[in-house]
Structures are given as C-alpha cells and as structure tokens.
Length: 222
Image: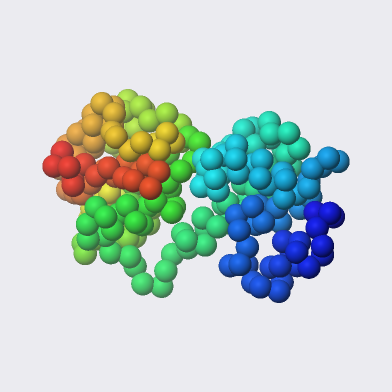
C-alpha cells in the first residue's frame, strides 16, 4: 500500500472515518498487513475476494485453499481465518437472556451465524428447556455426515446431562444448498424415534445452507 497517498490507505481511512466506512477489500487488506514484492495489500485482498467469490466465501475457506493463492501463504491464510472466526464469535457469545426458539425461522437465525458456512459438514444439537429456551449448542460430529456414525446414545447423553426437555438437530452443507440428502432424512427419523423412547422431544432438524435453510418441521417431514 506504499503507492497510495497516506491519507487514502485503509488503516488511515479507518482511523479517520471509522471501520464502517471501509469496503471488504480494504478490511481484508488490513488483516493481510502487506502484499508481496509485486503486489500491494489491496491488490492481494482483491485476489483473495475474487477467488473466494466475495467475503462470505471466506467462511467456507480452509487454510490450504487460501495458502494456494499467489502471495498469500499459510501465515496470511491463518490471519484471515482467525479474523473470520473472531467475527463469528462476536455473534455467538451467550446473551444475558436465553434465546427462545419458537419457530424454525428462529432456529435458523440462531444457528446460521454460529454454524453456517464452513468447508466441512458439522452436526450438532441445540439443547432447550421446557419453554424452548436455549441451554447450549453442542457440536457432535465434524466431517461428512453419515447416519451410521451419529449414534443416538451420544446425542441423548448430551441432552440428558444438560437436563434438556427438547432438542433441535442441525448441520451445515458446505455446498451452500440446504436440500437434505437421504442420509439426512434417515438420521432424523432414527433420532426422533430414539427421542420418543428417552422422553426428549426432537423438535426439528435444520440444514444450513448459504443464506438459506431447510427445516424438516417446516416442510412437514417431522
């Protein structure tokens, strides 16, 4: 960014105008810190955003994917993903008042900033009290979701330990398409049946996509 007039450099603009005034490219440039011998930080930020299809694509990126971009490397890739994760965590800290999940839309709104996106599938449960207020959200599996690998015993042990009255199942689709697979439907049916035996209601299974979600309850499949 040496070629820019100091007044116009992202860090200086942030100091003068506030962080809200900066565009995605400028914010990424600040996180990167510097470019390379033939490229400014702004130029490198432009390459990153173009390669990831915009800033939202960073939520699904891996260190390996970013490190392959010319001028990025593993250190800068780690900086970018750390910044993305910090942003995610600002939305996921437990509020003073428990969130109530009164509908599939409420569940999706709660889950998307916490578990949407990502380069791999993640399966988990939201534990709820008798008024459907969130006790906690717990990840149980990371990697390709296979109905045979998620055992009801693990799911309901977590729920029983927390004293949950009901749970919402969830997982993300890295492709961005939340349409459930046959395995998703099989897993849902198994866990609903197990929940009936355990006295813990499975309220829904929410599949998180890119800016969309699929609810088994909303679709009439639960």
